[in-house]
Amino acid sequence: MRFTTRREFLRASTAAALSAAVPVDLFAQAAAAVPSASSSAWDSGSVSHLLPTVSDTRMLIKASFNAPLEGTPRLRVDDHTVQGRMADTRGEHWHFYATQLLPGRRYPLSLISSTGRSLCQPWELATFPSPDEHPQKLRVLFYTCAGGHALMTDFLPPAVRNRLLRRGLAFQPDAVVANGDHVYWDLLSPRTSRISGASPRGEKIAGKFDRAGVVLGGNNEAVLKRAAGPQIVPVYGTDFRSTPVFFLQDDHDYFDNDAATDEIITFPPSYFMLQLARATQNMYYPEFLPDVARPLGLPWSSAADRASGVSECFGTIRYGRLAEILLYDIRRTQTLAGPSAVFVDPEAEKWLMARTSATDVTHVVHAPSNPPGWSAGKWGEWYPDVTGSNRTLTTARPKAYWQSGWLKQHDRLMQAISAMRGRVPLVISGDMHAIAMGRMMRSGALDLTANPVNVVLSGPVGTGASGWPSTGLRGTPAQPPTHLDLDEQVKPIEQHGFTLADFTPDKIVLQFVKWDVKTQSVKDIDALQPFHTAELHRPT
Ligand SMILES: [Fe+2]
Image (cartoon, rainbow, N blue to C red; front, side, top):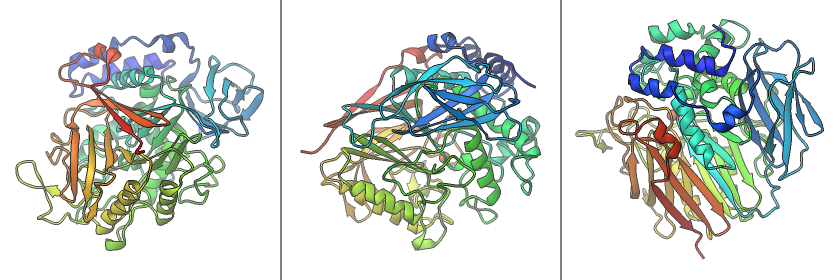
């Protein structure tokens, strides 16, 4: 089935999803959702979705089109012309990589077909300030877990997710961090695959992957698009065309839940999982652009089949000398080596340590793809806690296949973050379906009270009724693990939402926004305001 416009797609997916176990009135409200003024005023033409990222001198734009393009499309960036590069084998997905741009400059962009036809209305996108400049403010929007297929049970409808994200965009962030789990289509995890990609319903919707087959160029490519496309295209559309995005991958982006049993351990990802994750990223959302302070040879960086010098799992938001946000996917390089095991590759850890101790940027923030601060008893967490009795966590029982080296790496990172002088220690993470904020006072034997590490759960966007920690498979709300003393200023709230971080030279201000699907209407999303604000001043 092919949809000629994004609105047709939304209407069809919304109608079909009525059969899924999501409140009917929610879908009715979603179907009635009115596009924002900017969406309706801007003509997306034949573009189905478009997601850009920028650095000080580069732009990388991923786009899909509502029909395969016959010839190579071009991106015009002011008076530069960039040839598109195909990301699939049918010509539906393209990316555009502009380099040698000027820092801190707003550029007019246009997408043009091989025959010279406009593929959408022109728009604008700005580069970041150069690493040596001193901008006075930066606003970043953070959220996690925006995935979920409309035809599968138990995810927030894509139109509602889009509305939440458009509310986030209304606060006019300079950058957006989408921290992991953009796609839920688990294939092997013993418990979740049966209600996800490996279920009869999942296979009816998308087809069945051949795990020994190539991902691009055969039937697997069509299966991948049917599984992943409806989780991303209607959620973003072209709404982010002028806002640079930074998409980290987490467990589900490798098409599985992090899980370990005697039968299977899903991470580190198998070859096939890697190909699915890489192909999804290549087609739908941008990799991380090179950064002056991030080595080009970190794992999964500078691959020959990608835009020159980009990294697939280690990223940087570098905004002059005001702020640097270190983004790291902890799944792809995790090892199972007991006390010497890591989540983050040792060379990437060296990069994190070097940037954390360097003094050339005012604010340095860590954004790992899974959460320091809280646990819900899941295998692939930093902490050894498992679900105990009465919805509590315990370390009295060992967590099978959990690696003590992961926690050692956690402590090395937290120690380095706390040791920053003259800075706000701050970690804003993904993966956990909750909104929370706390101060880490102790981590194991480390006394952090001299400069506690502020930890934040940024807020989920796509979670369904049974996807919350306390309603999920383990039935345990997110709680501080035994390893930590955590001063919880906002205890984990199981609602949808996002976090805004405002950076100025003397402080970071965090604003938390939440929306309660049980008590609030979809229309209420358009007027959401922060329910909690935290001012984190630099120590003097
Ligand atoms: Fe995750």
